[in-house]
Length: 368
Image 1 (cartoon, helix red, strand yellow):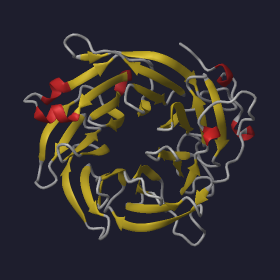
Image 2 (cartoon, helix red, strand yellow; image 1 turned 45 degrees about the horizontal axis):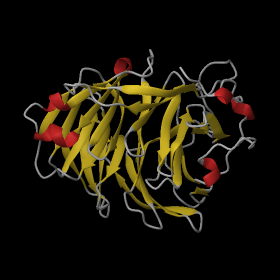
Image 3 (cartoon, helix red, strand yellow; image 1 turned 90 degrees about the vertical axis):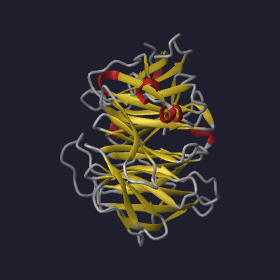
Image 4 (tube, one colour; image 1 turned 60 degrees about the vertical axis):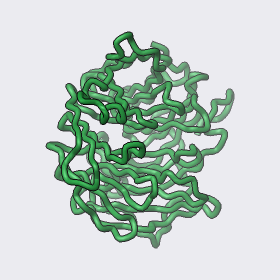
C-alpha cells in the first residue's frame, strides 16, 4: 500500500491554520437553521454560479455566487415538508430533485417552490440523479435498491436490487458508481440497465481496493471517469484506476494507485473522512474533508499534501463546482467530536475560490 510520505505525521487539529472564507453570506442573510446534508452545483457555467442545498431543517435553499464581488446570496428557499438528505438539478435548472423523509423522492419547481412526490423507497434516499438521455430520474436508497422514475407518471419504471447497502455514490455521464457495505464497489450503466429485460445484469462488481471494517463515506469519479477516489470512515483515502473488464463483463478490475492516511487527532487516532472532492482543472488533485473540520488538498501524482486548513467547526458536506474553480463547504452538527458548543455546531455555508496553487504540490511551500 503506497502512503503519502509527508502525511504520516500530519499537524494536530489545533495547529492547523484557521480558514477565513473567500465568499460567505453577509450577516443580514438568513443562515441555515440546521445541518446541510448535501450541496449540488447547477450544471450551467454562468458567471454567477448557483448551487442548491438539502437540509435537516426541512428546507431546500438556492444560492448564487458573485465571484467578482466575492459575495453570495440566497435566491430561493422552500419547504421540503420534512428533512431532506440529498438534492440534484435538472439540466434546465428550473427544477431540483431531492430525497426527503420518510423515504420520499420529490421534485421541486425552483421558481414557485411547489413540490410533488415522485415516489418512495422503503428506507432513506441517499442520492438522486437526472439521466438526460432517458429523461428519467435515478434514486439510490438504503433499502438496497436503485430505482428509475419517469417523473411524468406514478411509480418507478424499473428497479435493481443490491446485495449490499449503499453508503455513497457518484455519476459520470451514464455510469453510476457505488460505495457499498463490506468494502464492495459496483459500477452501473444506467442507460443500458433501463433497456435491459434484466437490469441487474448490467451491475458490475469492482475489485475492492481498500478493505475496511468501517463504511466508505465518499466515492468520486476523477475527470474522464477512468479513475476513482475513495474515502472511508477509517480515515484512509484512495485513488484507483479502472482496468479492462473481464471476458464476461461481470466484474471490473480496479488497480490501486495510492492509498494514504489523511489525518490524526491529538490521541494519534485516524480521523474519519466526511467527504471528498476532485477538480476538472487537475486530474491528480484530490480533496478530503475531515469530520474534525480539517480540509486537505492532495496531489496524488506527487504523493504529497498541497495544503490544509481548519474551518473551525465540524464539516457537514462539500461540493466542487463542475469547472473546478469553486469549492462549497458547509459546517454543522457532527457526532464525531461529542458535545459541542452552540457556536461550534452552528450551520454555515461558504465558498472557497480555488487558486492554481491549491491544485498542484510545490516543494518547500508553506502548508496552509
